[in-house]
Amino acid sequence: MRKLSGVLAGMLAMFTLAGGAATKQPIPAPTHDVALATTHGRQTAVFAGGCFWGTQAVFQRLKGVLHTTAGYSGGTKETANYGQVVTETTDHAESVEVVYDPARITYGTLLRIFFSVAHDPTQLNRQDNDIGYSYRSAIFYANEEQRKLATDYIAQLDAAHVFHGKIVTKLSPLQAFYPGEDYHQDYALKNPGNAYIQVCDLPKIAALKKQFPELFVEYNGHYQQ
Image 1: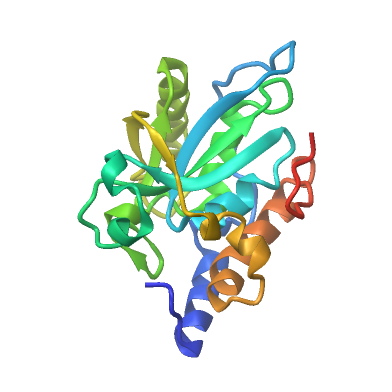
Image 2: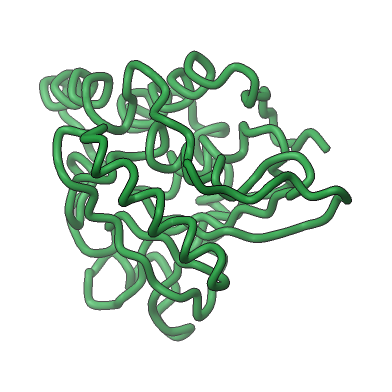
């Protein structure tokens, strides 16, 4: 589903810039969030928001993020490979594991980025031209605190009518995360001339830099510690 004709690419570019995946103004911060930790450490969050190329490209450019991995979550180990996931016969979603320092960035801030520039949370089982359950909007929460923060934030955004439709993001307990194939890692960085990357993912990076300059860091294959 990732081969775009010139006409379709242009249409998607306009939609991406106008839709929830790249809102023109920063969405409200979560009313409920955890405080920054007093000591440095490593915590993990797993998000699914359509093609994992773009989701990874956004989160790896956030201050406080230590590492990201594109992969699969929601299904079994045996089906955690691209060849099977794209058949839409598994329960996997293309996901990104985000390892972050809770002393530098909060889970609530990660949620804010996820719901604003990383994808459009109002699209059910799709992101633009990528259609199927594997492209669903989902948060795989690692603990009760993550579940509660995500639930509260969704309620906050829906109540404020921040988006053009109701948020359809699915919350599921994290059973396992399976890293994707090597060629999927850093795909947007390694393939900047790819038409899909130019249409679907570069606008997300640009929106992140414009809306959240205090969080944005350049990424060239190495994370800023």
